[in-house]
Image (tube, rainbow, N blue to C red; front, side, top):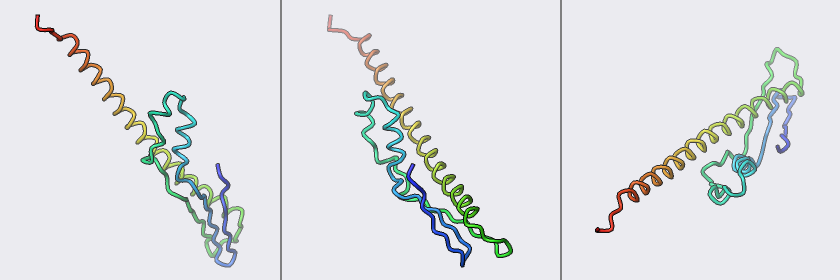
Length: 123
C-alpha cells in the first residue's frame, strides 16, 4: 500500500490523513489474484474503480490536549475504514458479476446440450 500522507495543524488542532492514487487498487488486487487463463476474460474492467483519493480528518476537542500522533492514528483509522469499505463493496459487485457470467455460460451450455439432444436430420 502507498504511504499515507499527513497534514498536521497544531493551531487548529486538526490532523488530515490522505491516501492518493487509489483508483486502480481493486483492479490491481483482482489481477494479482487471477490465474493467467482468466486475465483475458477479466480485462481490468474500469467498472471496479475506487475513488482517486481518500481523505480523513481528526479534530481535537478544544478541552483536550492536542497530540499529533493520536490525531494521526484516529485519521488513519477513519481513512482505512472508508478505503476498505469501498473495496468490500467492489468485491461484492465483482462476485455478483462473476455469478451472473457463470450462470449465463451454464444456461447457454444447457440450452445447446438440449438442442443437440433434440437434433433431427430430417430422417
